[in-house]
Image (cartoon, rainbow, N blue to C red; front, top):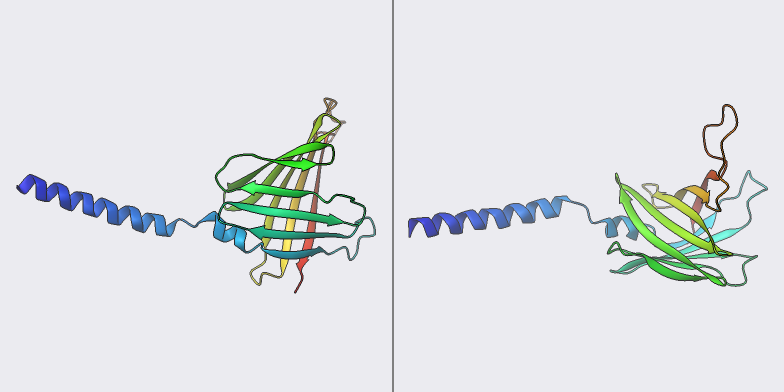
Length: 172
């Protein structure tokens, strides 16, 4: 009888402790919900950037990003699943495989685009300012067509990798 009581109390304490720990771990979906809305690329100060808008929606199962550019006949619509599985999206005559990552508190999308049967990987780290009015996107683009080659003297990154930082403003 005493053993059963001790076991029951121990199990009760374990359930309470797990509920407290679960409440302390942030749900990445709440972080992604801050991205919801229409975002316009801030091209001020750069004549090389074309106009771009991103419409981001979040459901309980996924994050969806529609990328709108004037030059695109069929704008890409990418879905990133919260369950960790890859999503296959239509992209031109090929496909784009997208995945969502949450590393060291950063919100990251990774998409492998198929262009003429060759992959191009785009990894974007997304962050929103505390006011929720500005989204910064740090992008790493890696062309994986097999010609990475050796870098030149003093080069700190592979010639098939490019990085950029862009800022989007939330539209009201």
